[in-house]
Length: 141
Image 1 (cartoon, helix red, strand yellow):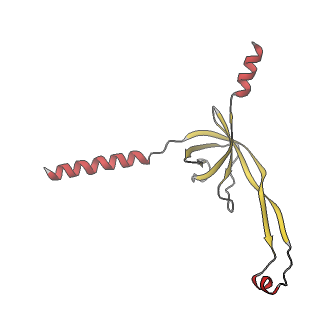
Image 2 (cartoon, rainbow, N blue to C red):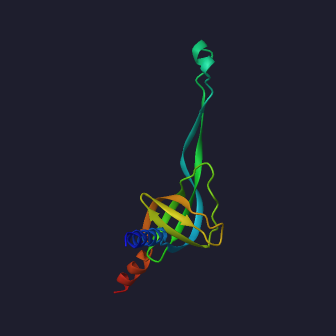
Image 3 (cartoon, rainbow, N blue to C red):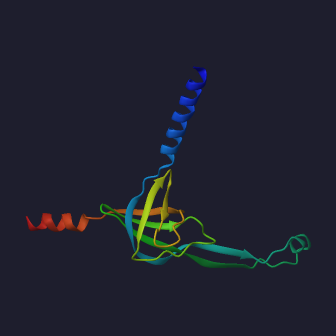
């Protein structure tokens, strides 16, 4: 009797755990990719020895850094997203279908036609997709 109870509880736990792993994705289309300014990178020519001896000059080199920003369009919302991985961002195929889900404070995106890997993106902006259609319909009235 006790074995059956333990077996039933283990099976029910396994069913709940496997149901939790099923992730639901929303579909969208990657419409556009542009390169946008996302900050500055500064390099200083100072060294530790130069600082101690006072021989280093205070020259710093600053340059603008650019990030890939994608437009992901769904039925109701247009998202502007940027990759979280600044050093090795993946290049996504524009015009292809993408699947995404929101996870805490960022978006997890995967492109089935590509390598189908999940990648993290920051949502920079959101816009209602059918805003132009609603405005046109109201102006005709």
